[in-house]
Length: 156
Image (cartoon, rainbow, N blue to C red):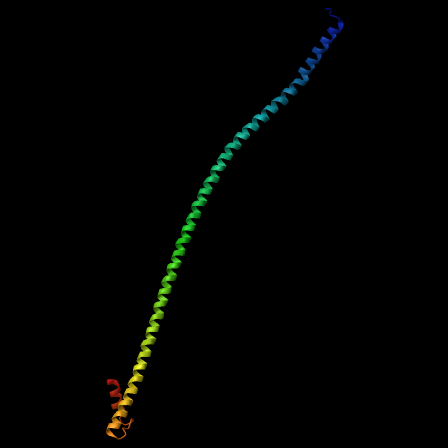
């Protein structure tokens, strides 16, 4: 194999281009590669932080949901208790109103019974006077004997 001048020039040109690339291009390429590696590492670290933050956020959400459910159950229990109180109060009010109506009705019945008794006494006294008048065969003056008639009505 013959080494000729073309091969030597090509070798020198290769080394010159390699030296120029290593002197001027290689640092830029390595800086870009290192910058890209740093970005990738930063991205991976951010992804890890995001996963941790997501887990913490999910924990907080679960805790908030538990608290909300607990609070909702407490509110529901309070509402049931209040509803029972309202029902009990309504029952008590209804019973009190029924007792009041019953007392009024009893008072009205007693008043009507007293009026009926008084009417009956008047009728009985009128019948007694009429019967006495027939027995005596003379008229009894109602005005003159009013005290006697009232006493008779009271006795009956």
